[in-house]
Amino acid sequence: DQQVKQNSPSLSVQEGRISILNCDYTNSMFDYFLWYKKYPAEGPTFLISISSIKDKNEDGRFTVFLNKSAKHLSLHIVPSQPGDSAVYFCAATFSQGAQKLVFGQGTRLTINP
Amino acid sequence: DTAVSQTPKYLVTQMGNDKSIKCEQNLGHDTMYWYKQDSKKFLKIMFSYNNKELIINETVPNRFSPKSPDKAHLNLHINSLELGDSAVYFCASSQVPGPNEKLFFGSGTQLSVL
View 1: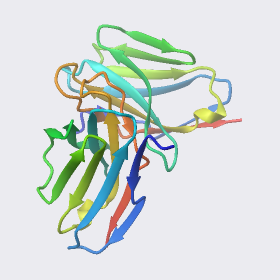
View 2: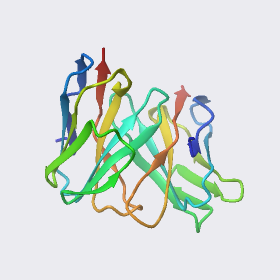
View 3: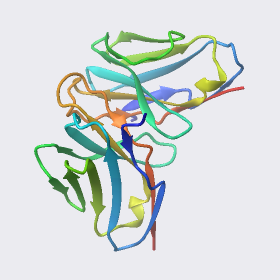
């Protein structure tokens, strides 16, 4: 039973537009959420995170929104750039105890020039 | 100068063989992990070590045995390989084991069991 799901395997966006990647989770005890980005033949790299005490966190062109009642988070990238083309993984964890990230299956984002 | 390096990058082997994947980090981190990316692309944690001590051991078959000779290294030994072990295995590290810590991943080892 997958506790974190990214239901869109792929997304294609025009350069300069907004990219919105979505993620749903089922375990209401998760209280810390992260996004990782992965290029081909590389490992995932940390992008942005959010604690459940917040509903928004922004870092430059990247903003993560958290809707706890809907158990949903989203990553907004604006404006989208060709270098943003990658696979994006959503992950969730508990703020207590050792880190044990639960990842979604990723969304492949393609930015078209 | 790669922060988290794992070898080999590709590993093709026959069922029943024993193989090892090595991982080293030069970030001075205390905590290291093994994650497995299965055929459905989910990344799942297998093990975590903090300063050479095992702190997370998910429901992984005991054919998988991690070994941490020092806090910069975490190797994964797999006995009696099975077809279902085919996956990409990622090593990662973080400064400390806390949940808010960023993970730094290696580039992965693609294991194919024939």
